[in-house]
Image 1 (spheres, rainbow, N blue to C red):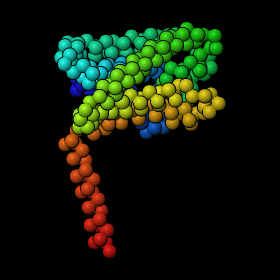
Image 2: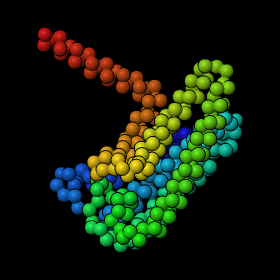
Image 3: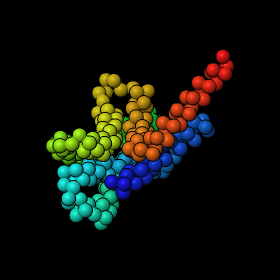
Image 4: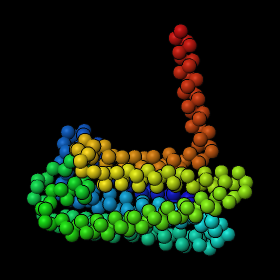
Length: 262
């Protein structure tokens, strides 16, 4: 589990590093320009990291399924070599998908200007600038990718159906609580990632606007990578204890300052 968490942390760090520094630099320099190659690089790396992250989350659902439903076979099914192979497959899937989408998108002629209604380069926004009869090939690739994403989502759902059935059969309340505490962080991360991405790309055009698109893009591109470490770290008792001590110390200092002022 911690091996896959390491991969997830690296992907989260990378996906934020692709969008946030450039956006901050543009704000400080009061410039919204980005070079053509810079835009292509941003599209490639963001697609690569997001796809690899979703693949890792899918693998982690299988990891939780084996750990809870087949604990005696965990060492056999998810040994060191198997974990490395699955992580390598997730990264390779992200790389291949990003390469195909980037090459396909930037081979299209842009007929409608060069202004993106977004704070980073994103494939749907670039397609809006292409000729109306030129992006059918990229749309086909997006449909295929969407189907694969849907199949991964179905796999995650089926894994958790089996997990919850197994957990509910555990006789002791302590055992059920331990199993749920192991699964809930991953389930929360998957729910946040999938729900924000679905709302961003499948929302009705009637409610679409530049400001809403910007808010939604922040939700799915920045919020999940920022919140994931917090969700998983809350399982660490020492970290939770240190956080409570910090909050209690800040609260007591504020109380003392207020009483001294009175």
